[in-house]
Image (cartoon, rainbow, N blue to C red; front, side, top):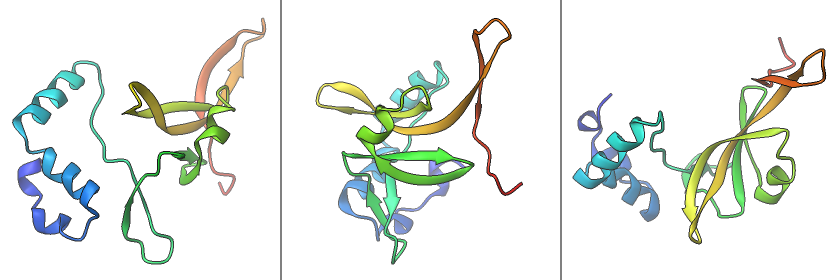
Length: 129
């Protein structure tokens, strides 16, 4: 789906910060940034969560990370995830306070080689299989 297929009417119920994000993707300078990011296999996303009672969109608070674990998404305090760096692999960043800060991570398991070396990381899977 291209941005041309998305109408602003769909964004009308969003909080102002998220509406700004939805509108910005159409700007030529943002399209140029996206094109440049694509050279590095990166993209643009709108960090958000949903109200637990209403399901409405909410901006992602500065002290919260989106975490994918067992193929399910949850939201955890940032320090809790950053203090477990060997377990969580960052997959999303924002520019905050003059630096790139992780805001999304996947919980990983790492295979250990017979010689004790760390090998390929794999995403944790649901225990419901």
